[in-house]
Image (cartoon, rainbow, N blue to C red):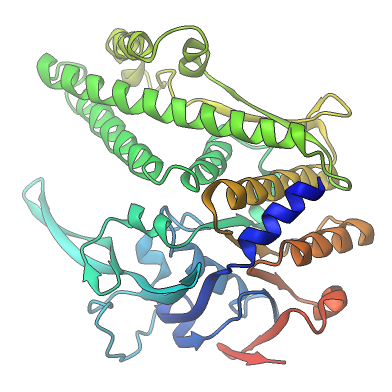
Length: 404
């Protein structure tokens, strides 16, 4: 354990994180520019003041849909500001940052622009996300993962274990992104293919061109098996890490992935699993017409267990579920530091909810020991008194940030 702590300290001593953050027409902010240090930042303010929006902005500097998974159009400020920013197309919103990593600085940014396409003899507009890295536009958002990584915990995730499986899959996929930046592309490709396949079957009442359907099913099977393999690898990596480094405060967890494709990969070569997946899609096309889904990676479930109690997370108390999530987040963070050589940014939204005083202070101590950048929101700055003199304290008022 001492050796582990020493190795982590050696990596984070190189420092990484956001040293300047600029928001334009993002949520409630017409324009905001802040310069955080590479340490914890405590953000307080009244409910609805825009604390979480800052965390969401940072999350958009990584691959994926951000910590709220919001529609791009819903993020734009209702009354746009008049700002001359070369990364911000007219009518969109933008986030840009200076990122410091292992002694080097990088300029990254993301924004939306409005496009149009012909659909059923009419022109429809849509928002699309664009990325700029070190002055180069037109970069894939997957490239953002080479410069910044983020791990987050939000109040919505307090219900992660008691709802449907889709949010749990998204949570797992975020963990995979940190180690495999191509995973975001795979999941996006699969979702696009599945949507095409589904709409084609529905619009033709099952009588679509067979060659077209077969082509889509081949591509879906290939992408799906790659997704399942990456998820399995990440779960195995975290389970090994958790087993070898049990936490002294937060509960030990065991994680698993349940699904047909994943079970087949336990005993069959990937090429055979891919063939079986493709055959199942073709065989069960009728289920789409019956408003049912086909079993595959879009139905897999991420399962979490409290090891000491031998209890699935969905049967644990609210406080235990929060502690289990924190255990996973801490394990992911440490594992990433050692594996990738730079620390992720922690985005912790109202993280102290459902934690007793002992666990709250234990979490703050662990964040301090990790010595990395974290953005933490709350309404009461007094909860973080133990970080006085170490963390930065920001207060949000009237869409502005005041540093204490």
